[in-house]
Length: 212
Image 1: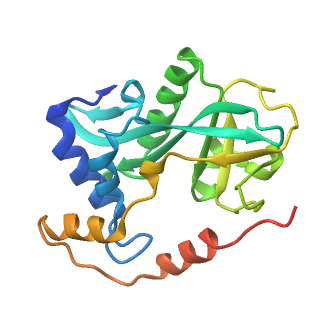
Image 2: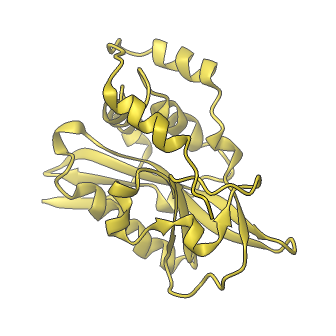
């Protein structure tokens, strides 16, 4: 039986462990996503109503967390939006549809709360099936004017974005201090850090931009 519910304090340690296992050695040797989860809950931009866990037969196997973000147009008008991450599923349950269920559940709740746009950074192959498109299609760029290949956007309500050029700003909590993250990881049960080919794939994707 599958249950999706809000995270509670008793889930905190389990969720951080899941996040660590899900991301370890995927993007870099080790990971820092579990540290982001650890500090995100106390930040003012964290949205607890959109913090969900998914249970399978009473066992928590995944989590999704959201923070506030914003778009700013060329006239300085701001639009409140969302970003999520990390979204984590235990490795042995990945590629079974549980992450998709978490996302769709959270999208429905976000709409009910009045949000209409989500911008994330991720592998397009993991998200286009959920309705995400290149941010360039919505004229959403970074403050430096670039359109990263990994920056994706989704309208929770169709035709929300009206063709204006927007600059994207995420929450300061996303700017993780690498030393603090390493120190936190070092305080936990040891996991072997490895250099894997997928890390080079991530480097290429995360450092490439579209020519628009």
